[in-house]
Amino acid sequence: MQLRRVAITGVGAVSPFGVGADILVESLFRGESGTVVVPELRAIKGVRSHVAALVKGVDPGVIPRKHRRSMSRMSVYAVLACREALRQSGLPAECLSGGNMGISIGSTIDSIDTFQKFFEEYLAEKSMEQMRSTIFFQMMNHSCAFNVSQALGIEGRVIAPSAACSTGCQAVGLGYEMIAFGKQDIMLCGGADEFHPLTTASFDIINAASIIYNDRPRETPRPFDRDRDGIVCAEGSGILLLESLESAKKRGAVILAEVIGFATTSNPENIADPSAASMVVCMKKALTDAEISPNEVDYVNAHATATIQGDIEESRAIHEVLGKDVPVSSLKGHLGHTMGASGSLELIATINMMNRNCVIPTLNLENPDELCKKINLTRKLEERRIKYALKNNFALGGVNSSLVLRRYENDK
Amino acid sequence: MRMTNEEIIRIINDSLIKEFELDRTKMVPEAMLYDNLELDSLDRVDMVIVLENAFKFKIREEKEIRDIRTLGDIHKFVINKIRESERIS
Image (tube, rainbow over the protein chains, first blue to last red):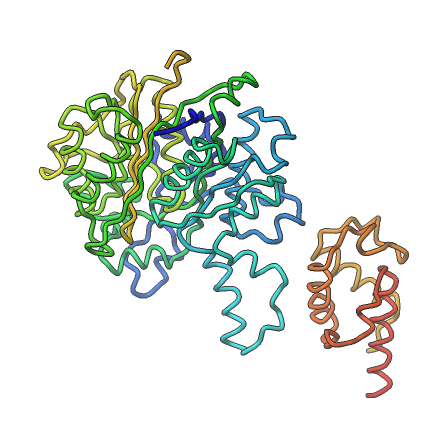
């Protein structure tokens, strides 16, 4: 239920394909892979996964030093993506101040690079003499969110949701609710994360990272595929600018899509094991919030990270809620798992699919797993009019999130 | 070997330019740290570390640091500090 309709009027992305939402979307439509071999991983004992999808083409120097000094890489990504979203939205500068525009941007973890830099001196020398005044700002839980606020001069609410792989989707959902309920008029929402071997190692240790394609990086990850073997860690930031439909229409903004439903739930059964039953609850609640029936959903952008169990559970859940016909695809095959950014980066792609009437297929899906096959897995670019799209993210740690988008039609 | 005042000033200016991405043309002795070089309280903290690293001395607890307002004040402070340590040794 929403008291005010919520429009998306700008998007911005920093991804393994480079800086910019256009580069992201065109690379996805072309079926490109961002996965590369990372020599640094190869050199670490105990890490079997040597692949990742890393951001390229970022010049932090475009951000003034005064703002940049408190930023780790993930904040740089978030600020660049926010700048792009703002540019696209055409929002007048005066909207940023006054407290009616807020920020909902989170990450999975804080900057491990920054922690590492600090502890290298601290542990080796038992010293903090080289500790710079701004290092703590790079470590704080809401580092991306407040850095965006500082860099862009946004004076409204600043929240920094953190829900692992659900972060980006949840951040957009929370921003949507704040606008829908009249608490803010405009929100910059999304997620950001930066790559560190710790993330790869964390998935590897629980046998959830891809390890057998180290010599063929572009062939992994393989969501829903019979031969998938786990996730590929990635990094980036995806940002959506949300505003009340009323505000967007009043200023003549181009409306890219509407957010009409959101749910976030927890799976307390197990901290690591995905659960179809829990996913079902989340998707159903999102559809209820959107006030649409399951048979109205035209496309599902799945979380599907290419773990053995996660893809099976999500397939079962989608089948139970939406049946066998709705097209389903995952973008992890192209992008890897951008962690806190995945929800929002994949939402940007989903908006583009809606507006181009075309579903991007899952990259590297060659032989669908028998246990995932009950749903309609898109394997080639497919023309389709998408009025309603459902976006899923189901996180390690148990936080689920589902968001419903609607193609913007003036008469609803 | 004893550094000349000019050498000390050059090292100070180069270190600050590198750390704070300053415009070399603004590095005149009368430049106010806050108003002209656009530094702030956080930069002031880091400036101490930069100078300590450049000259291998410890100055964080020196009271005179609080009175520094201009780039020239930094030059004088560091030169005095170095000359003082030369006298002692």
